[in-house]
Image 1 (cartoon, each protein chain N blue to C red):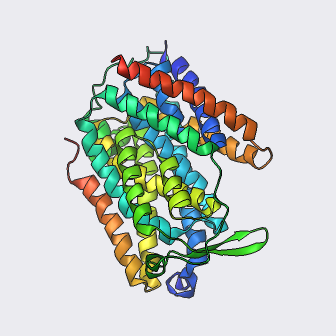
Image 2 (cartoon, rainbow over the protein chains, first blue to last red; image 1 turned 90 degrees about the vertical axis):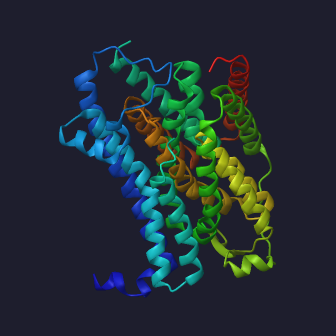
Length: 133
Length: 277
């Protein structure tokens, strides 16, 4: 743990290694969740006729909000487990930004702390501004 | 068709899409949209949702390797992500007011442009003198090659930033990574060596696509029944593609795929024009 807070640990090349690891584990975690959810989904609904999706109706609140998805996962609802994996896919690059921010703070690179904060704010705006219309 | 059969066919299709996307350098997301709309006749909005997820997953997967090798310019990526994420949010907003036929036709056009871009001559040259802004923003860097570390500088930062904003808008509107436009901005405009521009572009695609993906998730574009085969299939295909790329020179293959994709693009435009979306 002491290693992590020292500055030398965060110099550019090591940060690259860490970001690489973060992305790799993010993708792996997401794939495993999607695979588990998908397997249960096929086990439960594999023999049913496939929904056509020729026209767009949109997914309900249980698949489109974090609260709905978590609730569904608690009830062991297979499509919600897949959606949890979807959340993990989307969260991976967002975590990467947060991670870069910490790295730039420790490097005391004010310019890039500022730049990273802008990107993070755009992401947060996109998430919480209710742009969904 | 049962759900099981559908998932198996889509899984195989997504695997091929990931493979072709990786070998041509177009990205798996781009090939997923015509597959879902033209083959399965699925509404383009669901296709866009699935394609965005495919783009994010392949970007993270591939970037993890490139970042570790130290080729990716993280500062440059971070700086340009201001443009692409704002663009992506704007694009996702415009999408609500854009008819799906128009989206299909735009998608076809971008697909042709992207295919043409992958065939062009790549920038191997390294600038030794950068513009003022490139120093100010600490964008100049070096990358490892077989002959050791190569220093590079860049110019036209403002123009590159603007093209990136456009790439972001298209990404948000069409649900693609718009890697071709990103490379155009870095490679042709900012004069970055192509190895750095392609890996940095790939690094940025995940964040760009995530910016609009959070909007599309809330709009109900992300169908779990599609997300599951598409994510796993495209990731598998892209992984196989990256392994193949180290062993074969895909020049002839790339030409064939790009021609095939151009035909697909023309069909998207044709169908869009005839209001079949």
